Length: 478
Image (cartoon, rainbow, N blue to C red; front, side, top):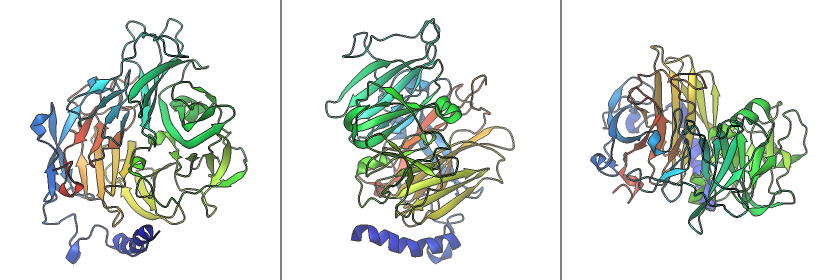
């Protein structure tokens, strides 16, 4: 308890000062015009020349046009797990880069030096059907979702929109058992003809459900189309392979209220890797279950418990959370990001949502439209990274990221990185010639970020892996 009271007590004083003198160094010097080289205590995690495609990205002051220099990121395309329009990126506590933007789960265990993919065999799995390849001419249209559960298992789902002459969607669950270190798969049929990109998240267990079974966790999958447009429901599994239809409450339902403990005392490093893609609009709860902020029309939250029953959720002080987009990390911090117009606000709570500290990212001077954005955090390295893609006044889209190092001391970002050339106008949605459907990113255990972007060097979206990191991040850097 004493370990957690220190940052809360000290932070209260620090944040008052940081909001008034945001970004100030000792002696009143601002990070925007500091004469101290931004990379004075940074090291490359490996020689950039060791990688197949290292590129220099511009590093700049957080909120001005001042350019500070370049940093090397190594770059990858859809041959490393993406497709025509997107990457679905995630990290594991073991240091894997995961990508399920295309047909099958793809991963690297060595920061991108080598890559592997899980290609299902034609043999039947127990309780599952045989592998059905896509129709000739329709290869490359699959896409999926993947995330690590708190026990180390990997839960993922692949969607093949046009795999048969009937045109019916097909689903293949892909599961990695962390204890056995083995992959398996299972064919799952869905009751609707069109599903769209899936989002996936762990429901923290132990799960004990009469209808859906028992297990250390449940894997919940929703459809970008079903959930966001029609609220039809999702699919759930307690073994990572066999999924059943799972209903969601109506947005205007009035459910019984449950207070949910969002104020954990301690969390292990695995909690730096449980955050789903933000479009899941929910986050795993350390005490068990899954929390959906701002789910109902009236702004109240929804909560799915370990018996897989729905409630109206509140924090322990009876409040709702300020954003649909929230997540824990291993520091026990609860991070939320709000988005409105061209302004994003990072909100941070050390007490389960009872009080908040804020940092605003106002892009109104640079754009009239934010296209995509995503965030991830790493409590071990006290690191918050925000990725934004916006339409510039000149036309092309700009991909950038902000790094906030040691957010427990100040939420003001250390630097801004421009990802790629920023010279391509692409957008999301079927029918567009040049597509970038959604932002995606992750943070490795060594503190290096990897982020999707798009520029004119490739017809399809790319992603870059950060190579230059603070030396204090430890042996992985040295």
